[in-house]
Length: 365
Length: 202
Image 1 (cartoon, each protein chain N blue to C red):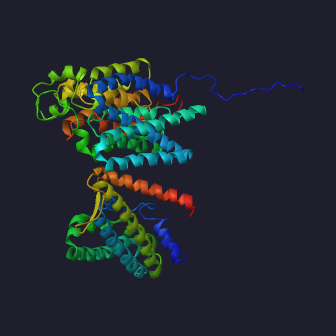
Image 2 (cartoon, rainbow over the protein chains, first blue to last red):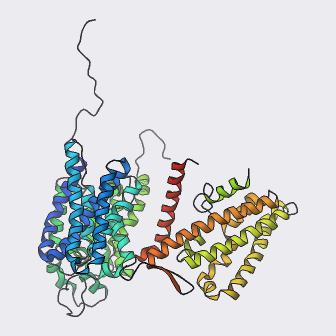
Image 3 (cartoon, helix red, strand yellow):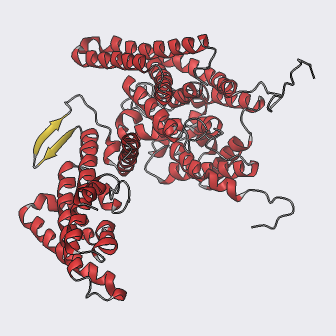
């Protein structure tokens, strides 16, 4: 036959959704913007360097890993690392310029990341799926606003390296990367990560503590006095604790656009509510204080590290809420969200396995 | 198989800690400082080589059904020697190693090599196997000790003398001194060994 018409067979999928990893990460970043901007307004440049250090540190670490994995642009990578090392030496040698040099460091990482993105865009390839930026921002929200810049950068680097890349990249990690970073920081420099807040809400001019720490030490008469500040302008605490109202708004936005499943936050916060009532403590306070809202809406709902099955999600949320309250009430720490979620991340594959529905026609194994 | 091959295997391809992964608990627990790691390495090496030799000498006389208790008797006599020697000559090290010295008796590495090699092979080869395994063990222990102590406390101290120090401004991540730090260092070292071997192709 002398037909020169070719048969074009494409491999499925033939219909692609507009939802990509990048768009989901973007939605979560948008949901976190109100809290972040408000925190920047409250904490100024001090909080700014924590946020910038975490976000750009995470994105820079991700780009380093990417370039090492694919073995491309290594000469430029070594140059960038050389510049950063030089800046570090500069900070040690010229302690007078420390303030400026720390910003130069963060900016250097930012410039590297942005130029990488431009280079990739020129090749019509994607440089990042923004998951690292999200991890960085989430980590920043769990850190106190006066934490040193290097804690932000090291924490972000550890979060991306040990929390995600070492497992094989996005989708292969067992634990929530931001929480891995925070756990590492809490265990490595406990004083710097648990005391560097701004002044507290005025109960005691000498000490500075978060509402949760004060409640733990039983230093307050009534926790109901904290509802307003916790919802709207909480100075004492981590960057993400400034306004529970803005976090709830962001979380509800994500549920509305169906980026996260309502089951996990609902079961997480519901279990916390029930348990705090059963334990005789103020339930609303415990819901609003600390990282409960941030954890329930933004950390526990991470697709990779939580359960997939709907029933599993509920069990996951219940477990998280239970462990959070147990750690808050009975452990030495005032806050339990970090380790509760990390623990349930471990249990998630098992839960998914146990709630697997029976395939029609088979015998229950 | 010649002697050099056996020694190389003990350090690299069949490294008792990073490859066979036995005897981990004491290794992870004592590697918090180079001093502890060094003395534990020496102690375990001595026990390993001597017990390998004795067990190999007696291998034809030990009834099969009660071989493990007899191995333990032999091993524990050498551990007692080490215990008393350390107590006499290095009391501070003895204090800081604490319970891990008597636990050398049930160190899986020593019992494992006795069971797998010394009870089946001649004295000379058992001794060589003991030396190879001990070298691998001590090397990994020293590396872990250096990394954990340097990063976790900012300096390496031996016999109250500071050997290496990272300076005053270094705020050490105490994570490295804790058990999670031990597991992390160990895992990264095992990965490093794998990577090196895949590159060299040995």
